[in-house]
Length: 365
Image (cartoon, rainbow, N blue to C red; front, side, top):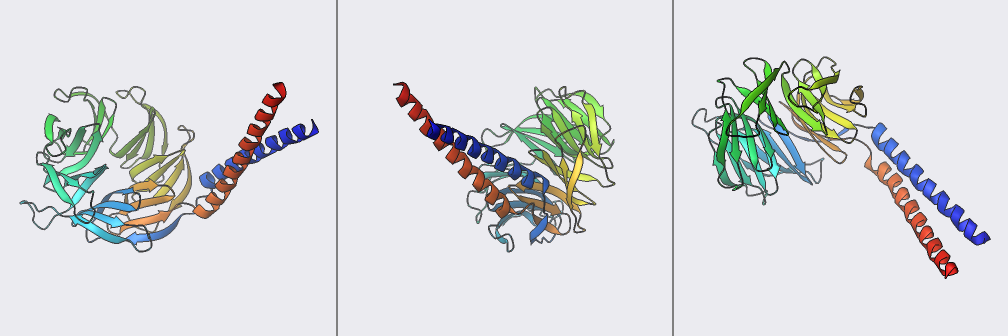
């Protein structure tokens, strides 16, 4: 009986230790950002979009096109492959602006050359497998299921079906005669920036062949990220705005973060928003309470931050003229050390509970 009580107490202790360890791990990871540059990729033109998959980083550049790097050693990134796109309007500009990686393919918007779909399964040998020229100067793309939404300078909003990745097919368009810069799709509603009028158009895209304008807002967004019904909007001149998008056609304002800079891009991870601020570099906001944003960390090396992508404890920040900055968010070894103890304590607690359960069963029998 005494031994059983001791085992019960021991099980409770290790469970508490495991929980305490998890709490402290969360605290260390979430509160103690130690931002440090650990790598840099220079470019010849202007760095634009960035995305990372494992040790591979994809980057678009105004002059050099679509670039692929190995960053397994972030202090010494190596170029694996690239894809340039010649055009008849300005042969000296071969660059790309926007892209999204989807499995073995990259969907890339080029300057004066429309949309290209590249097979990236072999990063050293990028291969063109599909293209669409209808959006001549593609500023931004959004991919939802098998539909690609293209915001273009000359051809408005173009919507393509890529069920057959090799043959993008136009299924809808919205053209108002103005350059359309950035697009984000929330459910059946698309928010797209009209730079001529300095507004954001709210479009019903339920039926891509019959797009209807259902509202206008005075934001000028660079990016919009949604989590559940909450939208985080990066704007020109107003910083980060937070809205309730329960009804996307009539968003409700919740909060803003503005410190004088233009917010260029945003990534949401857990309770934090990672913002590429044009003037202030990388900013990290605590968004636990969407109605009370709190800045908790910042990294600024003087460059013009344009886009950001976060993977594990690394942030990749593209800077217009300075290429790509690779920034470590926290000291990984310390967090792994704490997390390791948590797993050990949890394993001991579960094992003890299993032994007690079997012993109790035998006593009953």
